[in-house]
Length: 378
View 1 (cartoon, helix red, strand yellow):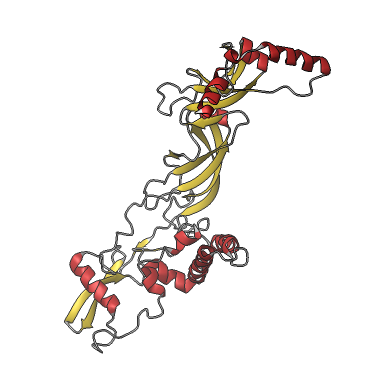
View 2: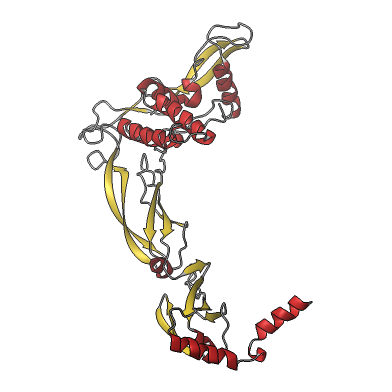
């Protein structure tokens, strides 16, 4: 079962998710990966089976409790079955062997030492995505981000107990969450560690749970956070806001808020690194005679002197008119590619004038044509 993904990860939920949250996540993923909606998609079919398997366990209170305590082994059909080395002592199985090796080597063989359940634990991070404009990505902005997160309960201050009461240290495990179990094995009597059944491995017992958080120590709240988006951020990049994720346990620090940025496409500009690219149409006469152009940039319009004889497809640079570097060191450039727009719907007089103009030109006025036909003759 080492190749199986964590069921909470499969459904995209935290370990403290409620039954409604588990059901909501399952319905969303089951619908998205249903074979009827993805005919012939083997990957979607595999995800659909994985989602159903995860929901079957996490929606059942008994199976969920065993999974939370023992992982995938806890929901295996053979969990707790007898057997062993060719019919040895009753009750000995490979789980016992894992505990045995775990007691010798400190874990890593299906068992071993468990972390102190009362030690401070860092809260889980929250992932969020927001969309911003091209200009907001270039120059930075501030965005309000609303998240649902678990916060330390204000009524019990995180201990899970009703007002005026305190949790009792479990008398069986003395707060460690584990107890020593003596087991008879084919190799003799061994003492191994197992989760304490009296406190459920928590190390403490709450006799009067807090009414607001129902003993969990955290409550779910919707929070609006002002996120500062740095200048120069690009599409797909993620920023981290420390301490704005889910609350920690036992006085541990809160997780982080991770915000992934989506930059909406711009009508005129494209981006490559810190460079801004755009195309600008020019007239035939502007290309021939040269002209003063008005070019749009992310800073506004700027003037550019187009030299006479400019060819269609020529690219020129506007220095320092690109995207600011994310580290704050300088800016990129803007590159403008001009193309000649051929005039349409000419009247008779304009056509005659154009023909006279064309007849007045010689081959020496067309360098690229001369090069082309010279190569063609070769």
